[in-house]
Amino acid sequence: MSLLSTELTARCGGACEICGAKTTLTPYIVAPKTGNSVDEQVALCTTCNDQVQSPENADTEHWRCLNDSMWSPVAAVQVLSYRMLNNLSDQQWAQDLLGMMYLDEETQEWADALSSSDVHRDSNGNILQTGDTVVLIKDLDVKGANFTAKEVQQ
Ligand SMILES: [Zn+2]
Image (cartoon, rainbow, N blue to C red; front, side, top):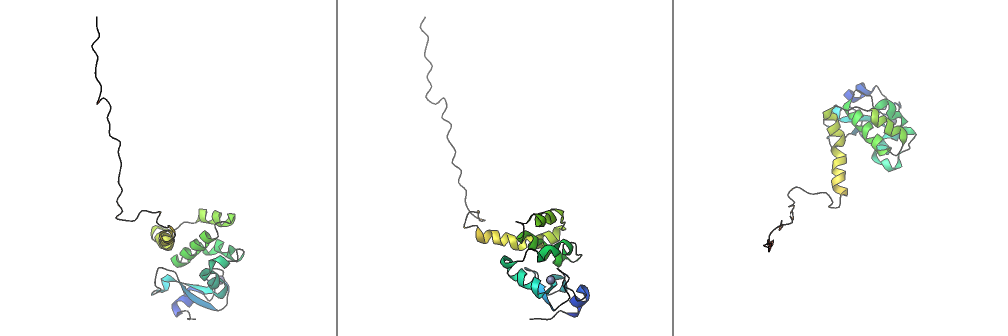
């Protein structure tokens, strides 16, 4: 378990950047960033950290705190909040929050960077890959090819 850098400690003020708990905090690196900069990390309490790692165990009520964290000025916190809201999107309140959330273009790309790779992994080949050949079969137009006009006998 790594410790928060001085910079991250200063930013979060000793409180979990998602739920605000003042407890032991660990830096969470928001993938696919590598965490080289504090801008790519979020200070998380143990509860948030555990559930971010295993979203299938997420305690829905705990994540009501996203209502606040989604408005964080820190892009990494916005990205993490956005992803957790998507994980909870079977909840009406989470859908409502997602509807209100605004991410700038760069932040949105970061937020979507993981979900798009999930789509590829789960697609089972249903999505066309770059380089696939698409063959179009076109019906030939034979209209009129064997048409013979008859003379009308007077
Ligand atoms: Zn927390």
